[in-house]
Amino acid sequence: MKPATAAALPRRLALAAPALLLAGRPRAEAAWPERPIRLVAPFPAGSGTDVLARILSPVLSRALGQTVVVDNRPGANGIVGSQNVAQSPPDGYSIVILGTSAAAINPHTVRRMPYDVARDFSLIGMIGETPYVLCVPAEGPRDLAGFLDFVRKKPTPATFSYGNAGAMIMASVMGSMLGVPVTTVPYRGGAEALTDLAAGRVDANFADYSPAVSQAQSGRIRMIGHSIAHPFAIAPDLPSLASLLPGFDMNVWWSIAAPAGTPPAIVAKLSRALSETLAAPEVVEKLRMVGDTPLQMSPEETTRYVLRQHAAWGERVRIAGILPE
Image 1 (cartoon, rainbow, N blue to C red):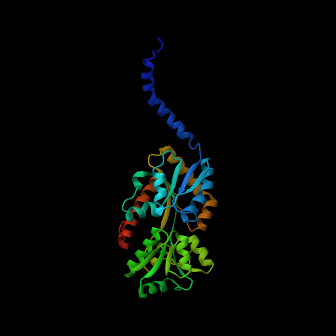
Image 2 (cartoon, one colour):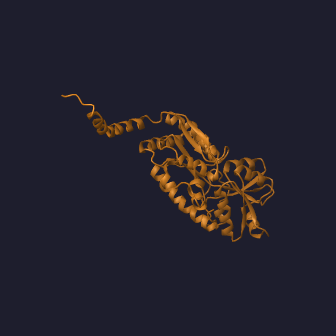
């Protein structure tokens, strides 16, 4: 056999390159992860999303065999951190907790969204769902019936503090269903919204379960209802708003997503690791303590769920009369 000439070598290498790339890619994906993974929480430290990230990260680290580092990137109701991951390389090393606000509400309330959930993310799996709890100051109405009567008869619109878009929309939808106006008052986060509620500066608040329980146990506020139509197993004595306001049924939820184009093999590994994490007894117990019910779904099931929720929250935004800004 004649030795290859110098001129022939580039042609042979060019012909071989696609095969080499195809051969190398499965090996790289099989070895993944080879370095720490960044889990972006697109809300501030202490928020419900941040709490979830810190519950999941140590067990997810064990399942993946690599450290999962929580990276808080708050701003614009979850848009800043979510966009950061959408624009990251699709290699599985940047993932985000994509929840109700960032995935289902913002697209209907923000005129120029920098990302499209269906186009710019690979959905990995669900984490869990929970209702919001309706809270009033300690000196406010004693129960849900008394509060609804208070809202209907108040000479001026009842005021609702909120730290995220979901809580604001729930308050607006409640007012629409009661046929009376309400005033929603924005705060940087849920903690600040609850603080002013406890001080009596506003009439009500739709809050995450965990911080609301803490404030209620200290006697600063009272929990009088929850936002889902079916019983809330973690707080079975707390009535649903639907019991007195038929048709009121809203939950909040969280999923995990990677940038669009993440290789299917890596998405599958992340999905299996997330399922293993959500089945761990310590995770189940910690989620229960913050009011969350785990939801295990495949990437395909998660995508369908998120798209259905996108449509449902669009209708709620319409009912609330909220226009994109």
